Image (cartoon, rainbow, N blue to C red; front, side):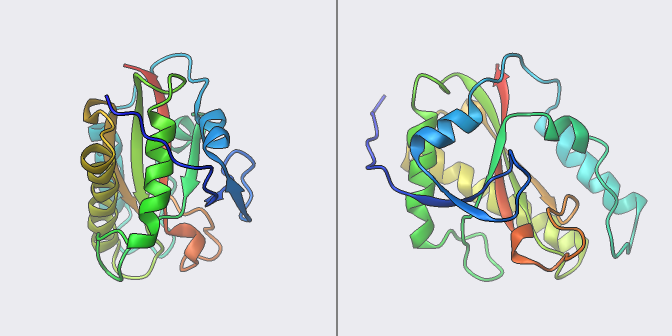
Length: 192
């Protein structure tokens, strides 16, 4: 396996551990520290999580304020962080400036502290557009990040699962169109 070395590049990350909306710059080591420590595998599959988002849309059609996902509390208890990866408008194409961020994440995932652990890559959108469209876009964006990690940065794909939740789990429900809701989340599920 190729070892990737990236200098200590600072990336903009929303500090999910504190629940704060302010942006903090994290180093590779801080990313590792925020993700490591998952002691056991959690019983949630990517298919289960994706299905919960679809069912939420069907159960609450046309809702201006989507209801919290049934698995939200379980997900919130896991080691995770939210990161800013920019995409071209209305597209799943990762903006070139964000490849540095994706590379830093890959570098962290290649360390012994995180190797062999399973991760969800979860895409989220704001509430602009229909809920169905946002769900599809978030899935494509999560898949794009996974694809970049696997192909460009050689992170083993069997440990990465892309899931899209659209606007079903807004970070700031009081401001559904806010940029803080457009994010990609990396959630550590523990060892496979």
